[in-house]
Length: 130
Image (cartoon, rainbow, N blue to C red; front, side, top):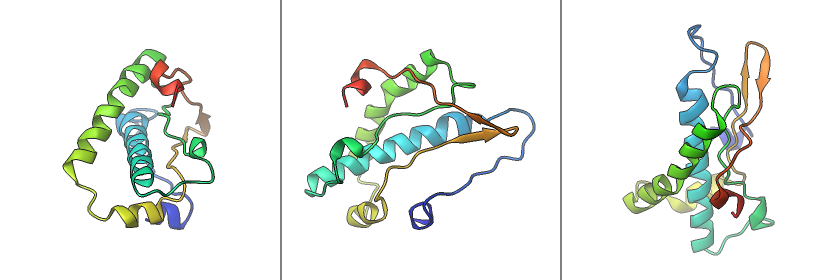
């Protein structure tokens, strides 16, 4: 809720072992993508649309300096099954509240060592068609 109320947030990792730990370079992007896709599904089911459905970004974004295009594609190929598992689990109890606070998709950006890391640009062919 805070993420959308304040229009963003910063997550800080103070470890010095890695430029970006797996949780920042993979786990957070996966969850951002999954939550964006499930919200899109719920919006569609409830007949709620954005200004334009194609504006609701459901792509997976990972830092290109850490995640190779091949790994990005491998992760991306698992996303739909994770969305389906979350949907089937009914773990999101208050769907209307989630939709209310998610007025924009979640999007990660990475800054480490004073450098902004770009996105891995390779998407699976199924993602390009979404």
